[in-house]
Structures are given as structure tokens and as C-alpha cells.
Length: 327
Image 1: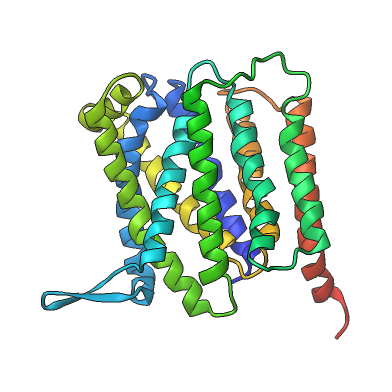
Image 2 (image 1 turned 30 degrees about the vertical axis):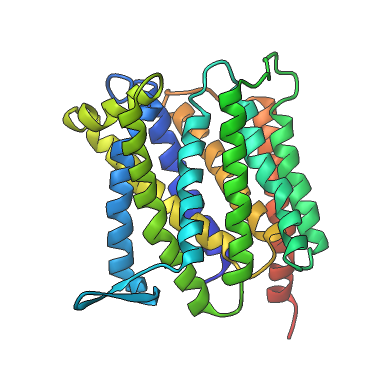
């Protein structure tokens, strides 16, 4: 399928995912639930959704196999397992990034998404891939949409050590993951791409759930919220909402990964991925505002959305031109 169908799926899943997460944490669906407390139940629901998806599509058959006693079971390779661990790191650090006290959420978003956009051309150059001119333009437009969010804001952008560690872990994990994708999966072979995707999925969500169990055992500070997410949230009226967030989160993981696995260079697929999530954030904000549960877009967000749309137009121009041009 076209990368644009995967991007649409990413947008369609990310919009309700972000809106529900915001509504649940803000107390609009009952008593407010802190972000870290949502993670255990949502991650478990993501794990179940992953199993159902791979079984329903039959994609699990694309994974490598290993004999375990009398059974032949799907099993990841060394490199897809490492990529899956990177995916688990990305999942955990993304949520934790927005729970660090004393740090602007806008600034953390800029560091995470902007850092990923900046590294995409570097990964391509290291992988020996040619970066198209339109990819450079789209990267600049999408990065500009994030920079606009900082204009005129009276906020402190100092970073405590935990924030530095979180951002570093996120960007290192994405760098390794994109390198593996470029070497092993971004090709014309649909079977190789699907095998990589399935084997990575077999590791990332289970590893994320295991990491949450460890953090809950450590306890202290924000980790106490994770512990409450295991022992208290499943028995409240908010539990179905947390489970729905997990299912939608898995959908974003599926569609987002398929966007990144497109055979074109990372400088093309990464802006498509980031643009889809940014537009989903805009749609979620507008939806909550229309429902009386949030604020309207300010001029920065409106300008940022316009820049994202411009990036999508630039990236899709060539494929549309080929469709419209007479044979």
C-alpha cells in the first residue's frame, strides 16, 4: 500500500488517542488519572491488540521461526530484537518526557520531534541513500512548524538531568532503529519489510510492559504512579478509557512503523510520519474545543499546521503529478 494510506491510518488513530489521553489525564472522563498511571493498563491493552492484529492479518507467518521443543514459533532475529527494544524505549521515554516537572511540554516536543527530523538526513547519508530535494524542503517545513511553537512564549527552557537523559535515550533509540530499518527493511521486497515489522512488534510492546513492571517495582516519585496504574486503575471506571488508549496507541505504532518502513529515504518518510502526528494533534485540539473540553488553536498552532500541510503538499506533489500526467 502507498505510504499515504499508512499516514492516514496513523493520523486517524493518533487523533482519538491524543484526545482521550488528554481528557483522561485532565479529569474530563471522571477523576483525573496521571499520565504514568495510564501506562500499565494501556500498554497491556496494546500488547493484546498487537497479538490480535498479527493473528487477524496472518502477518505473524512472515516472522522467522525457531524450534522450541516440538513447536516452531515466530522468533525475531538479533537485529530486529534490538530494534524492538529501541521501540520500547521510544514508547516509554515519549510518555515520561511529558511528566517531568519544571520543563515545558512544548520544549520537550521540539527536542523529541525536531531531533528526529534533524537526524533523518544524517541516517540517510550514513546509509548511502540519496536525499531528494523535496525531502530537504519538507524536513525544513516540518521542523519550522515546531519552531513556531516557541515564538513569543514566556517559558523557562532549562533542562534538569532527568530530561537530558530522557531526550538522549529517545534520540539514540530512534537513531539505531532508523539505521536498522535502512539496512534491513527499506527495500522493494515487501516480504523483507513485513518480516522486519512483525519481528520488531514481537519485541517492542512486551519489552515496554516489562520495563513498566520494573519501574513500578523501583517506585519513588513518578514511578509510584506507574505502580498505582497496575494495582488501582484496572478496578476503576476509567479502566475502559485507558484500555482504549492502549488499543489506539498500538494502532499508531503499527501505522507509524509502516510509514517509516517505506522504501524511500528517511528524509522522506520521517517528515510524513511527523506531519501525520502533528496534524492529528491539531485535529484533537479542534475536536476537544468543539466539544467544550479545550481551547481553540492560537496563531502559533495555526501557522504550524499550515507549515505541516505545506510539507505534505511538497512530499506528495511528485506522486500526484505522475498520476495526472498523460501516459
